[in-house]
Length: 228
Image 1 (cartoon, rainbow, N blue to C red):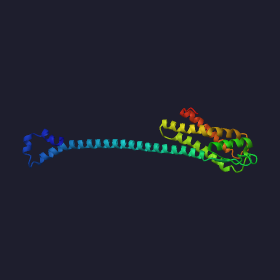
Image 2 (cartoon, one colour):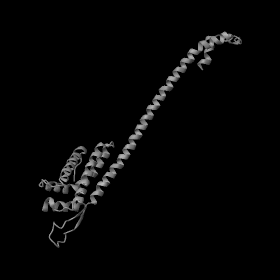
Image 3 (tube, helix red, strand yellow):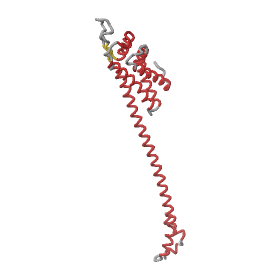
Image 4 (cartoon, rainbow, N blue to C red):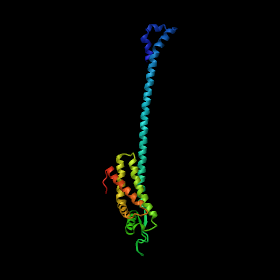
């Protein structure tokens, strides 16, 4: 609009009537208006680049927000699966009392215990017979170690997750309540018993259970959770 109107400003209207065949008038109009047209074009190009930069910034923020949401969603799923695996490994524990524990023909001579009862029977047999109750407990003892290490790694996964704080507290409560209701007491008994056995060949159970207990205590403080 400026380019069309500008000639009428700088040149008298009667002059335009006779401009036919007058190349000088056309050159004059072009010479006068082209700097303004070029300036306007440059400004518009600058503004368009500014808008493109802003659009790119908004797009990056939106993409970053989407990636964070996807990562959080993935971490929710992983934490849920981790908790489920801890519970599954706990209930899969199987402990068969060896023949060395009871006298012949005892009703519970070779009883099979599961989950919490398995840990309780194992700790009771350790108390009665020490570390040498049987050579056939390797699989069970490694199962206990795996459960303890799995529970300890859950604390590490939760601590480094980028999920919201209220969700961290929710997962911490679920883990701590299950741990204290099902695992804590028997691990403490095993830990106290095996401390007396300096040559206990599976001393790692004591070491790893102690580490788990310390992690749970730290979780109580970090997430301000009152235990059972």
